[in-house]
Image (cartoon, rainbow, N blue to C red; front, side, top):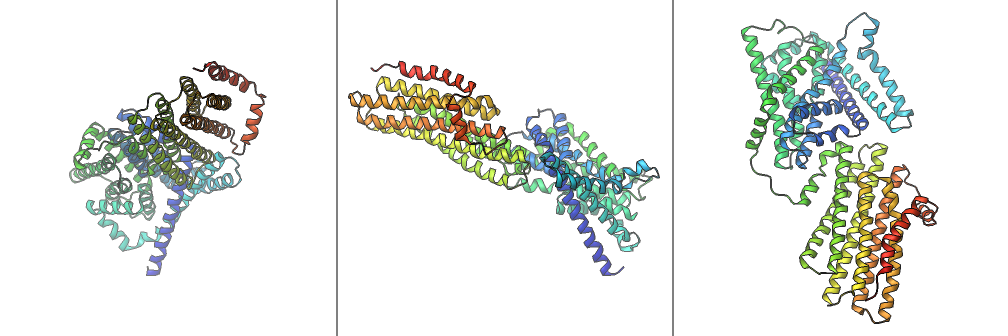
Length: 600
């Protein structure tokens, strides 16, 4: 065989590998979209029960078709302090089991039978059909779910096309002496493990590495003795991805990557000792026989399931080993750092999970703005410099979160999102901006209270009652915006607009009443401007609450083009019975209270 032949084989194998990896990526992305991130979210909610953690880890990995992807997500969850290192150990063990499903799917290529029905199970029979169905669904389907299913089918088809190409490319090697000699060297367990680890680390996928080995079995020259060390090494090589993902992360995140590495190294050493001890004492009758793709899939599963069962009782020891190897205590992080950690870039590969965490950060912004609103109102009654410092700290945190959430969502939007996920990202971008503006207006009120304090002025008792009543109405408006956003509660969202209109009416009444106080000399000029400015800022906070309600209504209707002005015009005309009832309730609760306040 000439150099040109070898070059042709290498190019064909690499081309087949490219198709294989692309097909696996399509398949994993499609499954992720169909699951909507539900599997990954389950990882957050799992209990400390290690058996449940192992099960969840296996399920998630079987869905995304990559133990590396699952472990990277786990590193991100640990880094964000969402799950503990102890929980991560179980998930990592389960991930090693879940990744074996790919090898079993590929092993179907070795099905041999004259039975028509059984032959239909062979990938050479159904892979082209699956690809045809996939491209039809992807090109013709109008719903996002249809396109996602099309992507899954296409991923399967392309994956097997790559497998077919690799198998066909290496077929001529079955009679090449150098090739046979090369794999005889891999019977040396050390060389075999190193080869498997290096190849897997380079392509960063144990499933793809196993697929290459399964393709090579078509030559009939790969024996059990040479394949077993390579398979064991592949489990070590797959650790490179989470190790890279842990760079720059917290100590516990690094420890979770170390657990993955130590688990696979310990398992490999245990199996090497066990297998070779048995071979040198009793001996396997099939040791020098040719191995096929089904045998590889079976050994891969036996190895990972056995190692997991053996090491489950020692999960605590694995955790302690990681803590001893990566020394040091986690620093005490403030709420800013903790919230920032929850926006881990590792979650970007799982849009559903990333959206969930961005939502929690947006809610944190709203909660901080709501807390500041309550604080600034108390400053008119009792000005406290320490409270002012807390208000400013919260506002700084709101601003930082707004910047980080915006950048995070923009990066997320650059990836492949479903139609639903795109709408959710758009909603989040708008809502977090509304919460940030609320925080700004709360600071404006604080500055009004500060100016009043520095000038030695104060509001009259009736003015304080008015400010307090308006503040209560606006606080309820903010609470409704938060709750409707948190629970995606449309009835609550619909109740914001009538309350906002009552707040508009209160602002107008209080402005007119204050002007009368000025004319009658009941209020100083120094207090006049802080009072009027405060009214305007309270009213603007309510406006942003109404914007959030309208955004939620638009998102629920799957229509971002709803004319908000027309919607509000119709509501203000009282054409909606629900709106009218709510408006009257708020009018009686707040507007009537304002009208009952007597001048002192």
